Structure formats: structure tokens, C-alpha cells
Picture (cartoon, protein in one colour):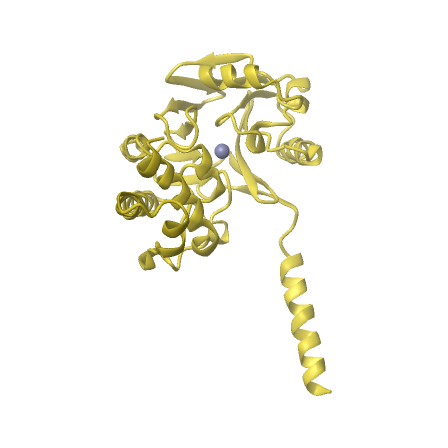
Length: 288
Ligand SMILES: [Zn+2]
């Protein structure tokens, strides 16, 4: 009887812990006056509030218009200033679909030229086509804030940009630098030949904290140390799969045999190793 009650109590407790993660949250970044992270379920975006208006990023509204409505409501709780810009991080719909309410609110939608080209070709019904594009680099200056947009080479997709706030030494980078965890399903759109160069370009930039497009463990921000660790992980998995490919073990045997115990404690290790092995098996085993 006591035991049953105890198990019920544990069950209730576990349930209540899960329920404690609210659907969304808006957090001001520590040490800044005007930089916020808006998280909705498992994706997040950065927005910057200035006296002259708001710069928002990724609407994160694929198949969930409520996320976008909530995003705008959350901005409105901070400021009534107009939303001037909506900047896309890359072409993937889970980050950039659903932007119409931003456009309707008067925002100018900005992306890399290649991102726009891809989106025009794909014609997703819920993706707003960018109004303005840039090649390589653009700086948005608004109300005393500078936001630098930079293309840093092929990494996760061939059109990811990073967004840097030079004064705050903050970087917003989506999907290609997961904070403290093993890269996952997004490896399907990943450029093995170019990734280390892209990482190096990001490492060389002046920033101290990184806001990821999906919350890191415990919601923490990333550091250059996280990026260095990720670079090492990528080199290690690449080298292991290359050996396996040359031994004729791609795909299935490689997936079964390859392990990297050094990274086994990283969140996502168990679920995500296969995506890394598959991507590198394609590269080292098939040449693509
Ligand atoms: Zn992506």
C-alpha cells in the first residue's frame, strides 16, 4: 500500500516537473539593456528593442500560427515601438515559416540572397518571401543598436547566416552550433567539406555568448569553448566514419559499430549519433 502510494507520488511529481516547462518564455539576456530571447516549445529567436523600433528574427511558426501570435504579443509587452525588421537565419521552415503577422505589422523581411532564391523556388504557402536581401554581409543600424548579419560559408544548409551584436558581444546562430549537445536530424542538410572552415570563421569573430536556435541544456547560452568542443566532435566523428567507409562498413555496420565514448555524456548522444554517421557515410562512403 505504502509502496503503491509512493509510486503514485513519484508519478505525479514527474508529471508536474514536465508541466513546469511552459509552452513559451521571453527572457532578457543578462547584462544587456534590450536583447531578448523568445522561446516557443523547442525553438527560439532573438529580438532587439530600440527606441526607434524592434529587430525580430525567425518567426518559428511552422504549423503553429499561435507561436507567431505569441511572439508578437511578447514583443508588445516590452515595447509599443514598431517592428521594423524580421531577419531569417536560413531557409529551413521550422525557423522561418509563419512570418505573415510580422509582415502585416509593417516589418521588412531580410535574408541572404540565396535564402530568398531557395524560398522563391520552394513556394511554401506559409513562408513570407524576403523583401530585402544581401550578399555576404549587411549591418542593420536602428535606434543606437548595430546588428551585423554575416554569411559564414556552408555549414548546416548553404545559406545560414550569423547575427552579431558587436557592442553586446552576442551571437545568434541557428542549428549549426548546438550548445553542448550532439547534432541531430538537421545533419541531413549539412556540408561536411565546408563545416570546419565555417566554424573557424565564426570562432574568429568577436563574441562571448551565443544564443542558439534551440535552447541548450538548461537553457544556457553557448561559449567559444562549446564551439571548440563541437569542432572536435565533428573532426572525431568524421575520422571514425572515414575509417569505416574505407573498410566497407557504411551504412548499417558503421551505424552499429561506431561510438565516441568521449561524447557519451552529451545530451542527444544516444538518439543523434546515427544522423552524424549517416551524413558522414554519405560523404566518405559515397562521395556526396
Ligand atoms: Zn535548420
